[in-house]
Image (cartoon, rainbow, N blue to C red; front, side, top):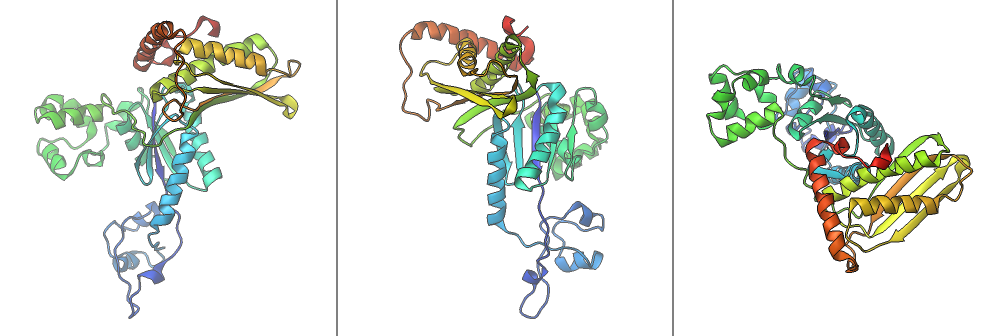
Length: 369
């Protein structure tokens, strides 16, 4: 499982005139500074005049909260089309849960592509950090700036975390930093080695130790109400329908995992096929029944069979989308076979627990092989 931390960067245009009073004197302080400006010694809370003395060609930008809110909303909306679970931590910071959505070996290409797509579609530069927990992902983003990506795996965790100063970790404030320094703990590596000392300071310190060590995490909290969720894959031109069925099984398993994490019951299902020569086909079905992975897997195969109207052509893209969640629609679940479906749902839930603990590939359908 990998968690992303996405940091939005800000555009720059000079607004120095807006900081001049009636006498032409420049007033105001800096609420933040770019990496280029920091190289000149410019810091947050410094007066504009002090900053201009250090760097006369400094670009001063006036705050524009309405614009920031608009860009933030656009980015949030875009991220929700790419990742099932997205949490907005602040106006320019987001967490995304990739577990069951992107394989560990594909995380690097996914986040680099995501960064480039955000730049292309929204003209916004972002930095992205990825790791097994939100805390380390956020820390990784600090070292990905500006406009970069950084992944922390298990094998490079120690090399990354050990030399970082304790004050650079989110959650270690001034008082905790001083307390750590008082016992000669100056880096996160030293903190990890002194578990007994740190945990003796109480519950907060115990939790802090787990966060620094990558042993503790918090679930993604979404406030954005999703209306649909889908998965798609572009593939090399493929004619073999048996192999295409196998890939549908895999996509259905991954999408089922995401649906169960969202804790929703979709009632409208869509499967789309893109063929070579720009031909397309799709099939929809409305089904108000209890959601189970097995039923969903079978349904996806049936939708593919019905949608595959160009059997002489190679397929280049497959997509599955689920929408009209029962929490949003007025549909009621069918009572026909409800008891049997409840038993199958128990199996689905048990499978979900195992996958969340050990990874989505720990259990697969025999038809995937």
